[in-house]
Amino acid sequence: NAGVMQNPRHLVRRRGQEARLRCSPMKGHSHVYWYRQLPEEGLKFMVYLQKENIIDESGMPKERFSAEFPKEGPSILRIQQVVRGDSAAYFCASSANRANTGELFFGEGSRLTVL
Amino acid sequence: TQLLEQSPQFLSIQEGENLTVYCNSSSVFSSLQWYRQEPGEGPVLLVTVVTGGEVKKLKRLTFQFGDARKDSSLHITAAQTGDTGLYLCAGAGNNNDMRFGAGTRLTVKP
Image 1 (spheres, chains in turn yellow, cyan):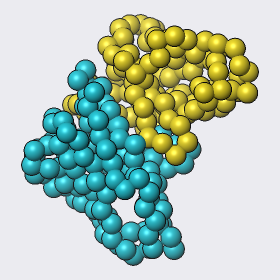
Image 2: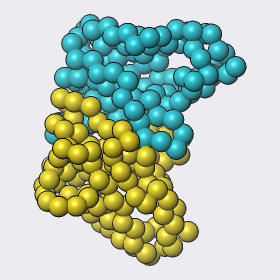
Image 3: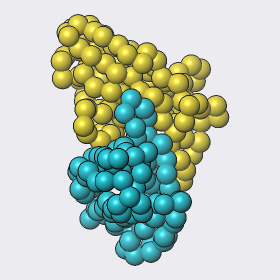
Image 4: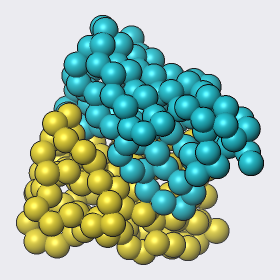
C-alpha cells in the first residue's frame, strides 16, 4: 500500500479557505476511491473515479466538494470554503480493477484541520 | 445503500485470549474484505472471501463468510499486542465501489 501517494499528509486551513488533496494511485491502477474518516470512526465512502470519469459520487456533499482524476496527473479532492466540520482524515485508495474483483490499496491519508 | 454493521464496536482483551468480531448486513455481497488499520496509517487488506461458507486462515486469524453471503466473522486465536488496531469489513457496493463498516477497535493488553 506504500505505492499510493497522498499529499499533503497534514493540511491546516482557516474557515473559508480552499483545501486541495492529491492522490497518485499505484502504477497501472485506473480506479481511485476517496474516503473520509473521523476520529474513532470507520471509513465513509465519498467518490469513485476511473480515469477522467466520475463513476459514483453519492457519498460526496453536493456543495463545496468536487473530485477529478484527469488523464494525466493525480486525482484531486477539492473542498471549497472549508468549515470546521470538514476536519477529518481523507484517504485515497486505488485498484487495478473494479473494487469487487480485487484489493484496494490505500495511501496514508491527508489530515485536514480547519481552524 | 448496502450497510455493513460491525460488532462489537470496541473490544479490550488480555494477550493470549481468543476473540471473534462480526460483520453483518441485510444485503448479499459478491465478496467481503477484511482490513486492519493502525493509527496514522491507511487500511491494509487482510483477506477477501468470495464463496458462501468459505473459511480462510491467515496464521492466527480465521475468516468465515456466511452461507448466504450476508455476514462474515473474524476469529483471532491467542491474541498478541501487535493485533491491536481497527478491523474493518468492506463489501462491494452497487457501482462496484467498496463500502466499509464502522469497524471494531481492538486493544490487546500485555
